[in-house]
Length: 327
Image (cartoon, rainbow, N blue to C red; front, side, top):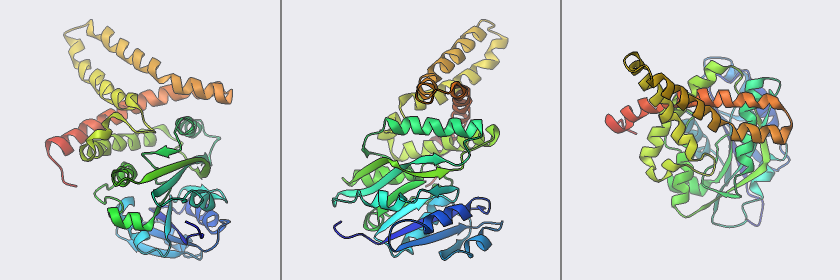
């Protein structure tokens, strides 16, 4: 792109009254000319609409249908040539739009994404979740096969070509992977710039986080049914991320057998201990990078996350492979 393209920022929002004001303020303060901002309210029941209408942005409301549908409603109503996506609990840095758009220098570049900052780094769980993402992003190359929709942009014409997000993904899990995989199959490039960030309100309580990870595992099964070649991982998630959840479910499945086979308990303890040991490389890398031992707590979090994802994957296998659930 020789001239600066027109840009539209699309934000899906569901019951986002607590977080959306800083997001909108940051989007409207971008150091880039002519940024259109569209908020698609996905059937909120709180004060989201009232807050959004206080800002000079375009407001669209739909019945609750999920973020994939909301994003599609947004970009289809947009005037921009480049569509930037972020979430209602994110706060983009001032150079966010410019940082993404500057990479559109060749026609085969279909999308550009960036990384996370953090809003609530005083919370241990939130800080651990954030630093794990940062550590994974540090090892990602400049050309990738996946962009996270919290901080991503696509050419509008490419979204039109592939049909946008798959609206059968009803929750915020897998729909951004699916879009990226379909765009890559068309021969386009996706670029990643870890220095272009949006600050995020990461989860602060363990149980809601694990519940979201259960659904993450569930929707992954649809994703891998739709894209079986990606079952071994992408540039963000490696093979261990896919092996650990089934192993976690296996240990749970073996527990009832310990009533009859008592020594099996030692096997289960060994498997759990090995799983915990295999969690350590990323936390140790974070400790080395930050000098803060508190991030060893991440090993326990990711161990529990493996069980949550594994249970979700088990349900997903039943729904998407056995029942052949539509979508």
